[in-house]
Amino acid sequence: QVQLVESGGGLVQPGGSLRLSCAASGSIFSIPTMGWYRQAPGKQRELVADSHSGGYTNYADSVKGRFTISRDNAKNTVYLQMNSLKPEDTAVYYCNMYANVAGGLYAYWGQGTQVTVSS
Image 1: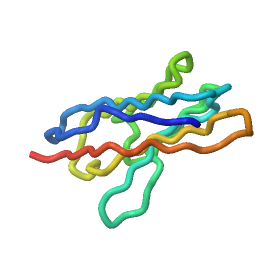
Image 2 (image 1 turned 180 degrees about the horizontal axis):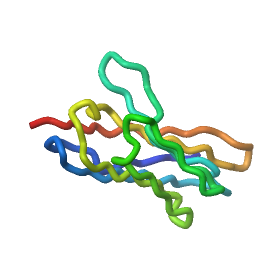
Image 3 (image 1 turned 45 degrees about the vertical axis):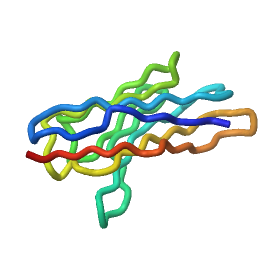
């Protein structure tokens, strides 16, 4: 059983910063892909950024230059540093990991953490 636990959300003023963390636990062989998604009220869940084991990272156009994804493979943890936050970044943020476990490669989701950008 793999579990993802997120932390780091909260309320921040426009222009501020937050750092999200997501740690995976369980019997995991490797995690080829780690990523962050978000879902604002009334909108579909969208990819924010993801990181692949080969070193490739991918960002949504709306966050390029402001957000940075990083990972610590030894800790099975992914981070999202969010700078220059805007009100339109307000959403529930979910971490996502594709993990190699005993039965194969599966996708796992965190419980979500609220990020609110408001003055």
